[in-house]
Amino acid sequence: MSIVAWGARKATIATTLVAVLIFLAWYLPQVLNPTPPDPEERERDKHWVDTSPSWVDRQACRWLGLCGLQHIRWDAPSRGDSDRPSTWDELKSLALGLSTHWEFGEKSGQSDWEEAPAETDLRRGPRAHSAASARILEEVPDYVLDHAPLVHLYSGEHFWPADIAEHIRHMQPYLRGELVNTSGPLNLQTLAGLNALGGTVFVTSEDDVESRPSWLHSWTGIPAPFRSGGGSGGDGGDDQDPPRWPDDDGSWQDVDRDHPPHRIVPPRDSSGRHRDLRRRRSLSSAQQPMVWTNSDSSWEDNKPTRGGYSKAPAVLILVDKGAGILDAFWFFFYSYNLGQTVLNIRFGNHVGDWEHCMVRFQHGTPRAMFLSEHAGGKAYLWKALEKRTQKDGKPARPVIYSAVGSHAMYASPGMHPYVLPFKLLKDVTDKGPLWDPSLNHYAYWYDYEVGRDEEGNSTVREYSSLVPAASNPDLPTSWFHFEGYWGDDIYPLSDRRQWRLFGEYHYITGPLGPKAKWLDRRKVCQTEKCIIVDSIEAGKKSTWY
Image (cartoon, rainbow, N blue to C red; front, side):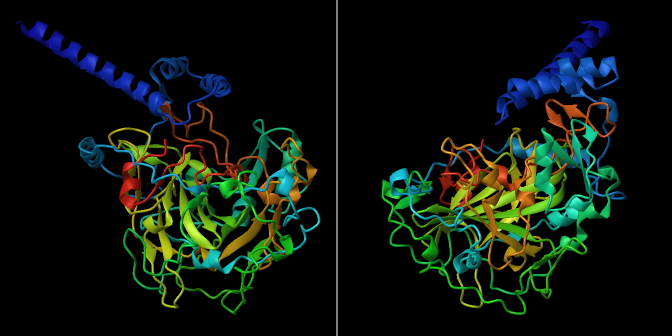
């Protein structure tokens, strides 16, 4: 074989391999996408591609899935960073991923607590937070705070927990790409007023986020060193877990007010709800309520700095599903989501980041916890979670982990691949600073049926569905009902900051708020498919998509 023929053969083989790789990189994300685009989204995508002024760029985007190649560059977590990972490190990670087989955890039996209970129309009685009782503020049950999660933030995190009030001060409302003129600056008391504009509103950063303004990092949100409590328990629970009541028959797994456990619901008295389970929480000097002050539009509190305390408040939303089932949602907000990298190219950045976990209680006993991960998440039996013992004799508390950059929630430290095969895309968690959200949070009760008509449609009374807890009676509620996005709209292809490779964007849209996270869910998960795993190891093997 001549040298020319040999060279032509090598070129053909190389071209074929490149073509196959391009095809797989284009095809696999579409097959593995857990939330494939609908026709409306595909139409929006067509308009997005058309925003590029370059004909070559548009054709490469449409036919090869390579959009904005001229914009690609290293996107450091903060300006001046020198911690860029090497391509060799990324390739080593990929090689390790090739030897790992993905397995799926089995559902640990069918239990009727998996779906939340609900009263039928015939049995419906007085309801807490109904029109007649919306002004009656309730305490947060002690058992909710006694079993609140402890969150390990990543040791190398750059974007820490943020205060939603501070975040909004740096944002401006945009509707259909145009700045909306408002009578005053945005704040948590008036945010829902943007719903009246008749379209989807994006509260958009006043600063170029690639300049990394200090509020984006929220350095003040780094928790103080954790000093209280005992050591960490292992997988499988802790001796201090509360006793099961009376037995865990699984009646809590699939319930709402119209589908109670065993379909039998005792009458409820809203004035005495949880009377036998709730003790009025005394407020010591170390646990003073937060106060909203109109003078400077800031949150103030008198709590001294303690181990695990962050100046950035978490948000606790309690949802009574009836028949003794209470869902306690802990929401964690960050001003910026730094996406993960694939071969040194970063994907998935967005302004604003809402993550959450939910603990389902049955008559005061914790049964399971859901952890949010990107567009889905996983649920764990309570006994499966890692626990941390407490020196004060209180029940052991679950320990969960927040991934670097994306802040997705996991039950264990380590590497967590998702969506793409071979660990191309992965979250990483470790035992970084331990955050105790029970020390500083905004607490609310939410009744998802208030303000809905007989067909389940929202009415003007819907804004009365969220009520502050008695420990913080002056908290605003308007922010919760804001129907728009808590960050910038997706940047156009013409924007120098934007690129998209094989369906993955450098910048995506900001998130919707807690109200859009299916707080009325019957199952523990926020998707209909809900596998509740019974060990951390089973959680590592299963995926939510």
